[in-house]
Image (tube, rainbow, N blue to C red; front, side, top):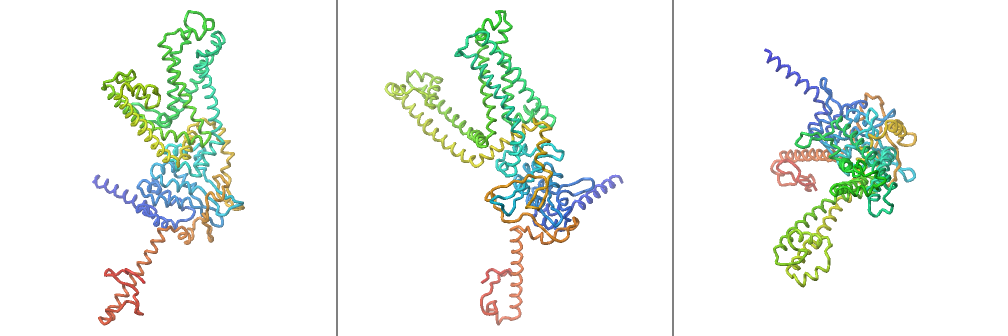
Length: 616
C-alpha cells in the first residue's frame, strides 16, 4: 500500500510539472522554432510580455525559458527571445523595453551566452544600442543602454569586462557598446589608479637600477666612501622595505579575495588549490616571480654581511669594497638574481602600453608570433645538433670544430651570423670537407629555415592583423577588471553619479525614452540606418492589452516570408492538379489528347503525383 501511494504521489508531481510547465513558449522552445515563439507571445499582455519569456512557475520552482533554450541548444528560439525582449515598443503613454527585466532575472546572461552560445552575444549587444534613423548636421544620435553591463542591481561593479576578457574573443571586445563601456571606465576611473601605481613602480625601478647597476658598477666615478655607502644602503632599503612589501601586500589581498570568491584551480594532481588569476594573468605570474627573486636577493644581500662583520663600519671601509670582499659564489648568485629581477621589472612595464590603444595592439601581436620564432629556434637547434655530430665524425683538425660541443657553438654562431668571416677562407683552403658541411648548414639554417621563418611570421601577422584592435581592447578590459577592486567606494559612487544613468534619454527632441544609458553622437556615415527600430502603436494603452495584430507582421523574417510563399504555391498546385483531374474525368476519352488550357495553350504539366512541374 505504501509503495502504491509513493508511485501515485510521484505520478501526480510529474503530471503537475508537465501541465504547469507546458506553456506555449516552452513548446516553441522544445521544437526550436523562432516563428512559433513569435506566434506564442503575440497574445501576451504588453505589460507582462517579458515575463512570459523569462519565467515559468512550476509549483515553488521558477524555470527560465531563455536558459532552458540555451541548455537544450535551441539557439534559434533563444535568439528570438533576445530579439523580442530587446525590441523597443511604444504606445501613446510609455515605452516598453525588456532589458531591465532580462538583467533582473539573469544578471549573468553575458557570461551564460559566452559559455553556451557566443554567436548570440552580438545580438544581445545590438539590442542594447539604439540609433536614430534621421541625422542632425551630419551626426546621428545613439543611445547605449549599458547600465546593467556596468553595475549590478546592488550598485557594485559588474563582471562583464572580466567575463569578456576571460573569453578572449576579440570580435566581442570591438562591439561599440563594449568599446564605450571600457573607454568610459578607463578614462574616467581606472586610468588614474593605474598610472599612480605605475608611477610608483617606475620610481622603484629607477631606484633598483641605481642600486644594482650604477652604484655597484665599476665605472662609477664617485669614490667609495660614506656618500656612496649611504646611497647604496638607502636605495636597497627602499627596494626591500617599500617595493617588496607593497608587492606582497597587493598579491595577498588578491589571493584572499580570490579564495573567498572560490576563484581557484587545483594543481599538482588536485592536491593544491591556487588562485586562478595567477595562472590566467601573466602580469600577476611575473609579479609573484619578482617577489620570489627579491626575497632571494634579500637572503643573499652582501650588505647585511658587511654590517654584521667586525671589520668596521661599511661607511668607513667603503660599501663597495666590503661587498666585493665577500665570497665569489655569493656574489655570483646575488648578481644572477639581480639580473633576473631587472628583466622582470622591465617586463612588468609592458602594462604601460595600455595607455595607448595603438601601442597596446602591438604587444599582443608580438605575443601571437612568438610561437613561430620558438619553432624556428627548435628547427635550428636540431640542425646544429645534426651537423655537429656529423662534423665531429669527419677527419679534420679545425680549432673551432673539435668535438661536438665546440662544433655546436660554432654552428650556432654561423646560424646567427656571429662567426668570424676570416675562418671561412682558412677552412676552404685547409679543410674542404668541413667547408662543404658548413656550406650545407648555411643553406639549411640560413636560407631555408630563415626564409621559412619570414613566411611564417608573415602568415601569423596576417591572421592576427584584423583582430589587433580587439586584442588591445581585451588587454585593457583585463586591466580594468584587475584594477577595479583598488578603486575606493567613494570614487565609484561619484563616478556613477556623474554618469547620471537614472535620467531618461531622448530619442528625438522632445521624445523622452528610457533611462539606464549614455547618449552619444556619431558620424552619420559610421552606421547607416534606414529603418526605424522603435515599433510604435496606437489604440489602447492598457498594460493588460496585447500589442495589435499588425505587430506580428512587422518583424516577419525572410524565412517566414519564404515559408508563406511556399505554402501559397503548394495550395495553388493542389488546386490546379485537382481541376486537371476533374476536367479529365468530365470530358471522357475524347479530349484525352488536348492540352489542359481552355484556349488551347499549354497552361501546365501535371505530374503523376499531382504537382505542377512547369508553368508558362
